[in-house]
Amino acid sequence: MMVTTETLRSVLRTSRSDPILKLKSAEQGASLALDLLSLGSRAALGVSFLLSVTDRLGFYGNPGERGVSWGTLFLDYAAKVNAFAPAWMMPFLGTAATVLELLFGVTLVLGLALRWAAFGSAGLLFLFGSAMAISFGIKSPFDYSVFAAMCCALFLGLAGSKRWTVDTLL
Image (cartoon, rainbow, N blue to C red):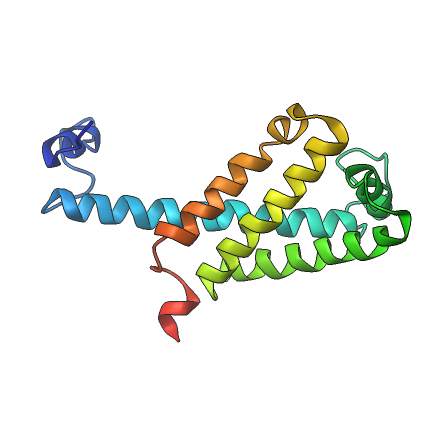
């Protein structure tokens, strides 16, 4: 379906029929939509990574408390997700995932090295989703939208806007 300028304007009208945004062309509307989708995708992925990291470090309380997913037992969860891997790898896998999520979370929120951060995030999410599928069954990564988040990261890497990023300031 092709979006025209008039379609966009009709959607963006207030109750008084005054346009919320004055768009000069459909290209400007598409550009604004890409900018907003990119900003929202960066924020959603980056904040999700950062919240997971702070949970793993015990910032929200102990494991089992309300609102705490992992607490300080995240290495136990890493062992469950990577049930196919040898036990000696668990500290490395859990720590590597945490460090990468912290790195990708910060870089996505800031928009720093955006393409690298986006593709790195997609790779990490693919590995995590694949490990979940192997250990828990294919339904598990879909229950937690891991592959949807991976596609969001791929969108950022392939078509994401650099507007409102640190990259544009450098």
